[in-house]
Length: 124
Length: 110
Image (cartoon, rainbow over all chains, first blue to last red; front, side):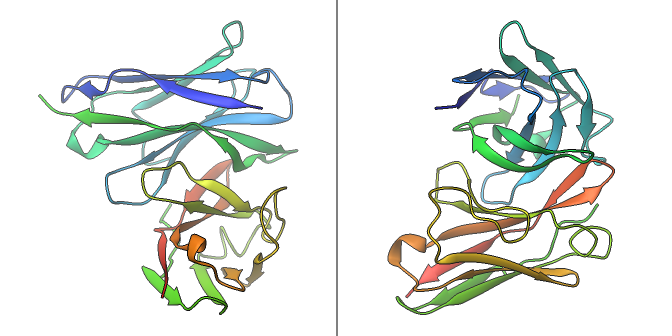
């Protein structure tokens, strides 16, 4: 059974960089059938797609966050990571990692496995 | 890239059917057959319920169905049960390898 687990600091100071890692178990992150992504959800609000990555390192980002986001993959550790720079209170959210089923020629189009999420609070 | 539009809340009695709409534009929902729906209980991660507009993953009851007409996608839950009370989110491919979610709908089972 595929499992995804987010890890990283629960609190980040304003203007600093948020860093999270998603560890995948029960399956290979190097599969050509899937993308891997990050989604966030501010308290009491809706879901927001942050970005997706293929095992080869190809990335796609939400245009509204693109200037601050970097997603990377480490196939040797079966992990992928999120970095969000220059954070503000508006970046306080539950952050989820998830697997996306790949549609040939399109990229990932839906999230079929999710991690449990990790809450990141931006506060001094 | 604006969020897709969903009603903030819908409700229905046990046994009834409810439909949740998800309105986008001709650049996202209207342009592609890649709309998905997620169920989320409070404090839990979302769960995939429908993908590619109308396909159900293994394990999802056939009470859940999806459809699309023009720029609006819909999730219909028939034979409503108490356990269906949750938040529901739609998501669409928007082209240029990007995705956008709806604002979410709270389903109340009366």
